[in-house]
Figure (cartoon, rainbow, N blue to C red):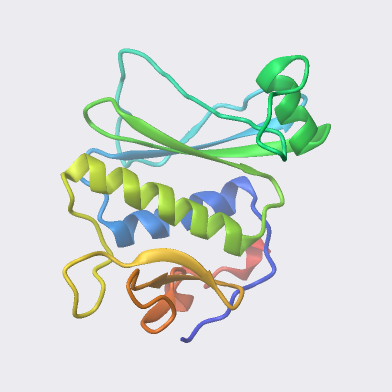
Length: 189
């Protein structure tokens, strides 16, 4: 495997760049849009940054579901999901949300703590967005697994976010972030 994994942590701009790279590789359908927003630790939400290359898709409604469990898989603390999220993220910790919306109005969001490691953030973005593209396209998504009829899957291998064969984890791998494309601007560090 070639490439380097930096010690960068999730910021709004980096999450946008990582998500765009993943979407190029998984073959997001035309009409799909990417929005990245950040919620400061005070709970306010900044407006999303639309990266769809055109007018965003209007949907009839918005919906999201977040299941939050304590470490033992038990009930939420008093105050419900908001109290549990505050406990997990810590007071004042910003959250970054990347939302992939499709032309039919469906969408999937990935929410990360600001400061999440590059490897963890990229693996999560790749996994969730690949699944969403698979569902939206009826089973067509990339990147293709060399020599097989299925896509590669995202995984962490030796501290690097990689695409790998789901049937031979670790034997056929390559980095999700390609150095020439995704690491060319060190000014974001």
